[in-house]
Image 1 (cartoon, one colour):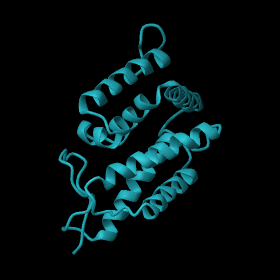
Image 2 (cartoon, one colour; image 1 turned 90 degrees about the vertical axis):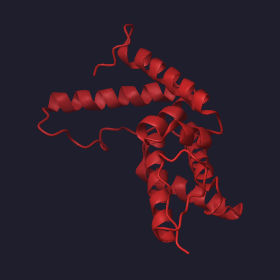
Image 3 (cartoon, helix red, strand yellow; image 1 turned 180 degrees about the horizontal axis):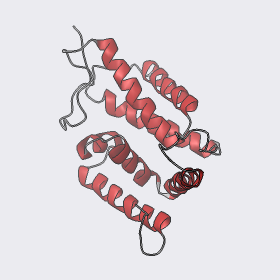
Image 4 (cartoon, helix red, strand yellow; image 1 turned 180 degrees about the vertical axis):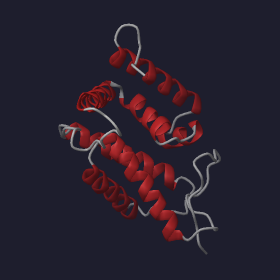
Length: 183
């Protein structure tokens, strides 16, 4: 029997793997999504890969099975926690080397873009853990509120509150007194 990942828009809890796609492809897709989450949380691709590998190692040691209903949520939660632990232990590196240049951008525009991203990262670092995780999963990973709630082990309404409070706080931190984020 072969399996595949359920789409994130499916709010019903179920196994990460399904029978309409090969198991290897489903696990590779889960790995790709977890790495993408880790990169967005710790801003370092190599460390993100290591963090995801550590999460899979923990899943194996704990006897987790990808066919279990809550395996995907457990993996997202574990990767998130490992990323938060990593961030506590290390100082973030400069973003300038990792940012793709903008098309037709002047050096001044490119510098402003890097500065905005640095301000965003610093503002995200100031958010409480729950708000930062809810915002990352919802806005960067495009997960539905029920899916984020499953990962965070909260109700969907609590996730909505964390996302709302996080967005409002980011607007205050980045945009100044009037909350203008500079879009």
